Length: 122
Picture (cartoon, rainbow, N blue to C red):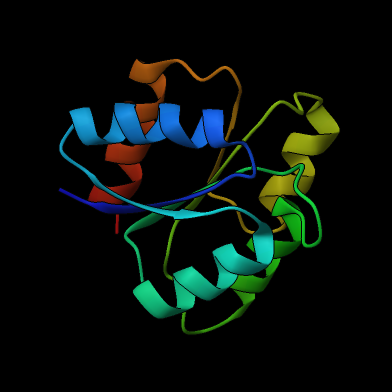
């Protein structure tokens, strides 16, 4: 069982991720924006972060960059999960330090395979 931080400003998306993750035995932490996501990741040291991109204030790309550049949180794998599905967004997300990039709506099997691969590789 992993502790997974979901950073998303949509209560609907957060609820959906919580349902999927808890069904597979994971513990879920939540943050409603990028700044809170960075703070929760630093405080809680989750096993993995699912990061939305389009959020008010600090967006997901900026939050990902902060977490991957901070030695306290650089070891935490981040998966960007967003509606932005352009190749340039994928490249930019990876450049910010994200380990993977999935587009919404996320396929449950693909999400769980991605998480399992990253947690196993820690």
